Length: 106
Image 1 (cartoon, rainbow, N blue to C red):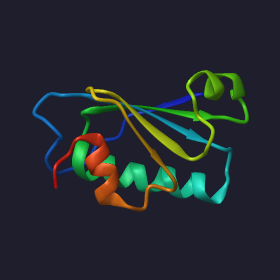
Image 2: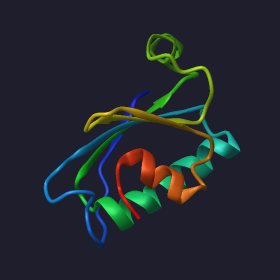
Image 3: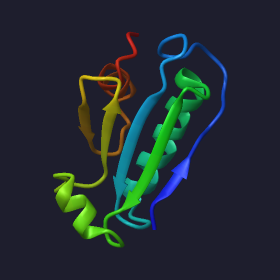
């Protein structure tokens, strides 16, 4: 089942009113997927406040969706908006790399 999450937190957003749209592809409760969700939630809370939209897609439940979206490795984070798009693969523990992919200059 695809889950949508919106988190709130403190700090400065990526841009004043730009909503960052992302999709996180995970595999059920695999350790790297669980870590990726936790790491992304922390990043969103600290840097995006409520200026993001996140869809979490379990590729075990929606394999055709992952295939159609070009996802072959999990966990994978796809930033869909604002352009340019970007993809980060792994447990998202490299916060600097994730911030750069999201367009948040740190």
